Image 1 (cartoon, rainbow, N blue to C red):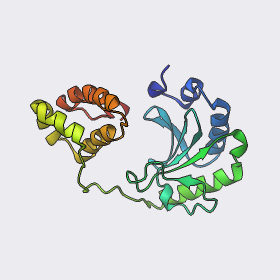
Image 2: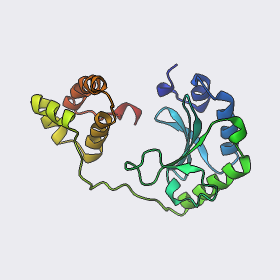
Image 3: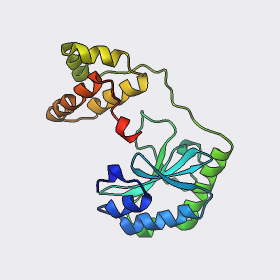
Image 4: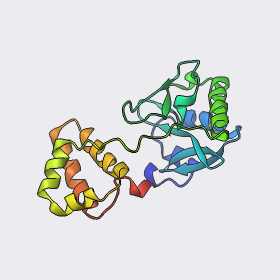
Length: 198
């Protein structure tokens, strides 16, 4: 089963190619807090009072925690990074490279601080009014495809920004071309890039 279709945390962990035991260790720590376990966007997500607090995930080179409002945390251990600098103001990641890196007491302290912020309603809001920077490749493709251009023009800034970033993040011309071929029909249909995960 693709991890993108996972409906439960158990399914996500079983589908993970790497770090299954490490994910289980972090999950055990999270499950003894006041957080509610669920899945969002096909991955484990832990909430408090309906607010997203922390996510759990694994990739080939690391596994970790995603604090949705991590920029509010004191981060005394300097464990957190902004993996999307320039794109996110609030979210922070805590990456681990081995089971030995997990110190349950430290993880619990960070999670409990995050819960305190969620309970108090503190959050760093995204700047929704900043202009969308459309990369030249996407701009040129929209000029050629009038229907896609018209559909893109009426999309919300957040959706426009997702498409723009998706093309801007491609390093090679071939990758950009493949991505453009994929997204132009989606734009024309009025779909967001990540609608299927929402």
